[in-house]
Amino acid sequence: MSTSISSRLRAVPVLTWMVLIALVLRLALIPFNSFLFEDLMDANHIHAWEQGNVARALLAGQGFGSPFVSNQPSAIMPPVYPLIVAGFFRLFGIHTALSIFAIHAFDCVINSLACIPIFLMARRSFGARVALWAGWVWVFFPYGIYFSAAWAWSTHLLLLCLCWMLYLAQDMERSPGLALWAGFGALAGFAALTEPSVLVVVPFLLLLAAWRLTSAGKRCLMPGLVASITLAAVISPWMIRNALVFHRFIPMRDSMGLEMWMGNNGRSLHWTNNDEHPLHDAAELADYNAGELAYMDHKAHLADAYIQGHPRWYAWMCARRAVYLWTGYWSFNPQYLAMEPTDPENIPFASGLTLLAFLGLFLAWRQRPFEAIRYGGVLMLFPLMYYFIHPEAYRMRPLDPLMVILGCFAIFALRELAAERAKRAAAIDVATILEKA
Image (cartoon, rainbow, N blue to C red; front, side):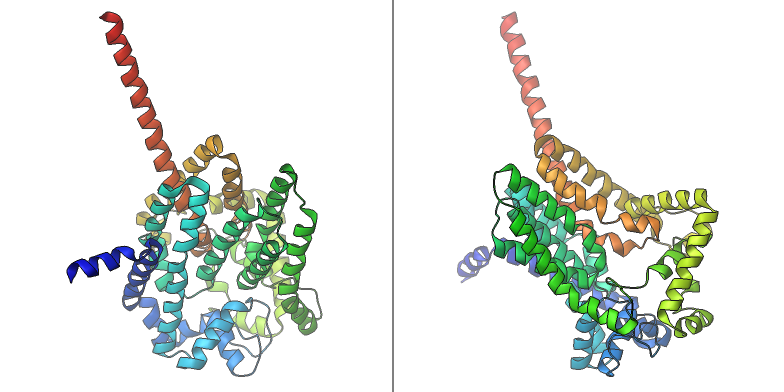
């Protein structure tokens, strides 16, 4: 009996075990998540969740709007995640314990499923051993466990989409198949409607794939055109909706003015200033309710004026934001640490992860340059915008799978280098002994 069970367990594919164990670990953390219960018991926390506010407006028949608990249409939130939240609200009730738990559980499932593309992508890039280790590291990866259980946002869906985009990009560099390129365009469009920041890496991946196809003597113009048209077809309904509602061209979202002002208003104790956000300040909310576009334009003007008047401060803040995103370090000021008490514990982990990933990138450049170009391009481009506005820790999480893969590759590459040096040293010792003999 036990032998039969053991043989059946061994027959289960390793990817299935990865996903299941990752999911159990993430779901197990939800009951210990204080944010979950705050969302349910404190009206201020409920109203501070923009995704939930838009979902509630959708179910009330108000369309995409009310991210700040108002009654006007909005283009602040892209549509995919609020629609998902609205689906759970419809099934389990608006802001009920069951619906909030279901949303967190959905994020845990999405985050756990990332084991699959991480394994497949790493196997193509660096071999089966690195792939196996990268998949298991993701199962137990602290950021993956914590953020999926505690942060009900579009981050996890974007992470999964970006992983599959990179996997498809590996195929596209080898094949001009139109269906493949159209699939990439459709996935990129869906990812953009989840979080538009991903669009910065799409042209890079398309150009890299086209370059490699051209180098191999294969056609790239038609595949690139098909991918671009498919991408445009997926995102155009949202863009048309924004143009019709606001009578202005709004590519994906209109909140850049507020985002710029939140990080560029002269205050530097913290990396953002939520106290002046419409969700936390009654005067700001009143200004916002006078008109979303006018409010965003005003904030953009204020931010631009401050940046123009303080260029050195802005350059220094951009550098600080870049350091924060890659290392977790902002300040050891006691006032700041009172707001972010876990920073001292997070800094060594975040910094170590970054160093290991960039070491992997360096070693990949020496051994597999095209892999280094692909991974490095995405790592450099994706967070670039946040250096200039304001950072949030969750904004780096879509890059975690790439850093895990590169970190595992660095460890294996260093082990191989050490083994080669040991062999050479042993061979030299043997030769020396023979010469003396």
